[in-house]
Image (tube, rainbow, N blue to C red; front, top):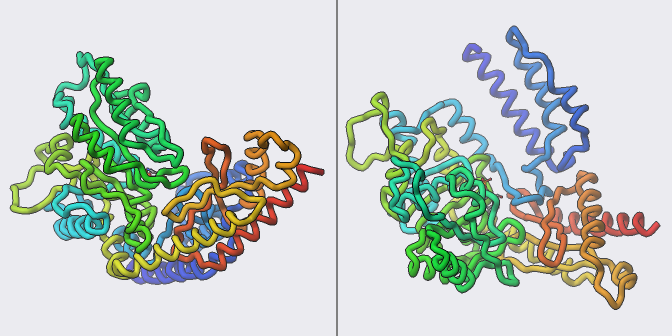
Length: 486
Ligand code: PLP
């Protein structure tokens, strides 16, 4: 493209993005399309000659956008709902245009300096000392893997980096709760520890891992001659957004010389909001922490902050400098390629800089508090409806609820309704709500059965969206129940 053409196409793209956000409320949150039909539309032969951009943009509008599930939609409430906020969207565009590779200070001075600055800003938001080593990576799953790699090297003192695990006789044991995210198991797989050596400590009735239960598991392993090395505690678990008992867990880690990694992928930044701050777990005692701006801070995918309290623990495993990347050392500079296995790195710091400057910490806090307030409203509405249950509370804006109508309960009285019956009814409700296009939810299976999960975190969600969602939930639930009774 010539520069003129670029500007013309760029204006068309900006108009396209503007229209998309202006009209997002009118789109179904999730499409109904079968995979074969979609593939038939999209899976064309590779073009041999360049095509006109107008056609490419038109196809993006007609073949891609209608068949996406819209994570930007104000009634997207599945998983952990997030937002690509507009400053972040534009910053990603500029970052692509600059096409900086933030691997070395020399290869990207301002990008490296900015990464250090936004990491310091976010450390302040998370209550972590600014002197922590930090790095921006693509997601919490890989951040946890990197942290545990550093933990293994530091705690076990094996020099695994040079020698590998060959000949090491003891089982390395990693502890986490039975509620922790699957990324902990994935890290154990990649590290060669094996899932068998991930000890899933049973959480308490509030889905929180307690220090005492952890200590018992560690003691049992020591008696069996195993080698405990790290604990992954969670702030904001995936199913119900519970916090582990992080202070007591930190005490156990100190007693047994274990590395404490806190997965605050979801829970980290909610402490900015007033009510989130009151409830927030102290992250300052963790050896490493991960928190996701792409879940909570309105950053478009993909950006996660990984912090490590031990200076150089990350570079001690990941620094490996081939001749062609050698640079003369400069005081105070950071070569971010030394903090993870990733060499070529995009300029992730820019979007965080733009977002934090555009909203300010106070603006972010106010928006987060709005989500917490809307979740409180929904929890209270569902909790006071005799046909609904809210089996677990959370300080975060994640509402778990299930439909157990009085008619169903009467059928089984005095026995409780079988869990499988509640699951099939509520799975039907989930499908009906999602098929309506009016909202998009996900589910979890708790100890006392199936729940619908409503995650409220999108920057555009208004109280009227949550009221509409609650109306939709009741309508779909009654419909599914009537159909099942018919
Ligand atoms: N940790 C928790 C508690 C999560 O809920 C998730 C994803 O939902 C992850 C880690 C993984 O995050 P990412 O998608 O950034 O790898």
